[in-house]
Amino acid sequence: MPPRDLALAFVVILVWGTNFTAMKLALDALPPLLFVGLRFAILVPLIFLFKRPASWFAILGVGALLNMGQFAFLFSAMRADASAGLASLLLQSQAPLTILLAALVYGERVTWLQATGIALACAGVAGFALIGGGSITLWGLTLVLCGALSWACGNLILRRLPGVNMLALFVWASLIPPLPMLAMSAAFEGPAPFATIAAMDTSGWGAVLYVAIASTIVGYSIWGALLSRHPAAQVTPFALGIPVVGISTAALILGERITGLEAIAGLVILCGIALAVLAPRLSGPR
Image (cartoon, rainbow, N blue to C red; front, top):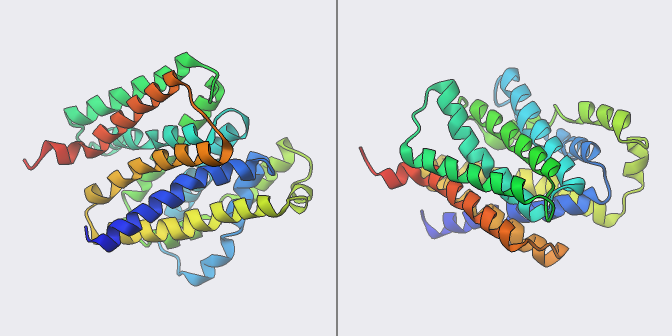
């Protein structure tokens, strides 16, 4: 990978890693379901810049699973039950979950190295369940893992869309979350969503705009460009840097700290994810 593309990969890691701290700041001003709806409502006008990139079935699936389901679970966890740093780590469980689901749904082969990595990741998650309290509750862990599962299910749709403009796809998929999320927010989160939005201060709006624009527009446009120029096995391992940036940024800006046991469990998860993602390269040519 040339130096320019390496630099772009690190830009994505920085944007997506710091994104979790911005989410936490936005959640100080907004309840989670309303945040999901507002985040994607901001992107809706951008659909006029792109022609429809895929079938309506694909747009609905990506919007429901990746845009709505993933973030409804994640934001609900981060509101009170999970720190930003650990959420950035645990959400990467989507990688081994995607491998397992692809094996079940598409019959893709799972190597013994991948199976070992998945087992390690599961052991780390079980460690968090046993530790309890600290930087994440059992309910928060469950919600983040539901978000990771939603992401993994969405990945199965993406795997059947080769050559699709991913930035355009995610922009069009932003049509799906706003109305259901605003309706659910009005029903369960009260007070009235629009009153809550009107009361937001500059820092709240800044965090929401960062999550909506930097994460989606900058992150996915660069990520899609890298995947178009290089093999997926060469690009996707860079995602392992996201929780490193996420935990570091949360510690620096939010003052979050993790315990020694949490650090060990997190390291086990990260090693498991790395092994699952890098297994095809470690196995060598066949």
